[in-house]
Length: 79
Length: 135
Image 1 (cartoon, each protein chain N blue to C red):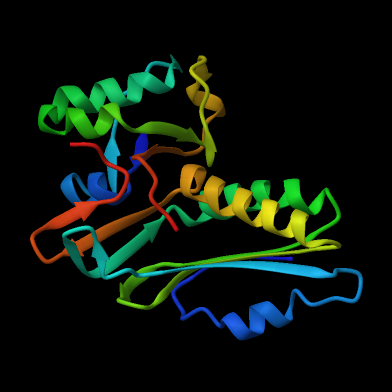
Image 2 (spheres, chains in turn cyan, blue; image 1 turned 180 degrees about the horizontal axis):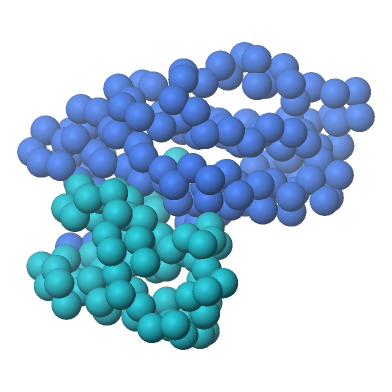
């Protein structure tokens, strides 16, 4: 599954990252999988949350089949 | 009602005029611009990026809460590279009376800063800082 990245994560990794997810997954699985590959970014990923189909995702199980878009949202800082 | 994320300069006069209606007696406006000094730290420019589709959805959710109370709302955020003094955000609420206008305008800017996926990369004289991120 291609995951969208923004802000500092997009600068460090790129605009997207391919992540292998189980057919049933938790949003935190996405973050854990990237921490393994980018341990230097752990602090940033620990402060980030997941959006699924443009909505902040609760920490519940999702089915990959029913998901169109996953994004990682680092701490926001608009305004 | 207007919700927008734009690369273009924010036209405050036009947005303010759009909030003047006969049924509302009070309009409160918050304008956020690029500040030069934060304590000792001197900022040179700020680059804003966004997850536009989600950001506009989140802004709409916030606006809907205020619209449901019978007020009018304008929320516009600029993204891209902004220089000192440039306007980054315009929030306006028109309400029958001033107390509701003040209260809901503050609600919208506070919540925008907390929930809307927009990010600032601050180019300070000493180094680059990413807004919201803890070391």
